[in-house]
Image (cartoon, rainbow, N blue to C red):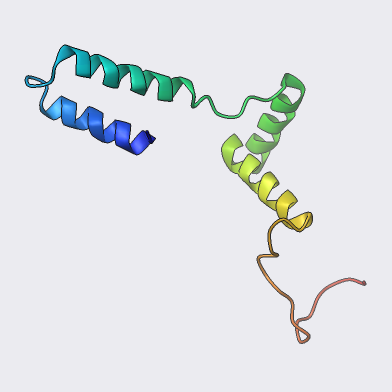
Length: 97
């Protein structure tokens, strides 16, 4: 079951609280609790967590945004994702190759 399905079931149960059985409500609440328990996010070692939080604050980003940026850049740099922009023959660049 997806999170959206569970959320929809809970909303329906809330709308029809008088008609839903205690057993059905108990099942839905247990499923919701299980889903919430399994969505802990990314757990990092303390020696990684501290510099990551500091860098995110320095850059004015949330930690989640910074992690998305780092992972995306790594995937592009290691050719797992295509380069999001292409230079053509007529583009000017600074520096030397």
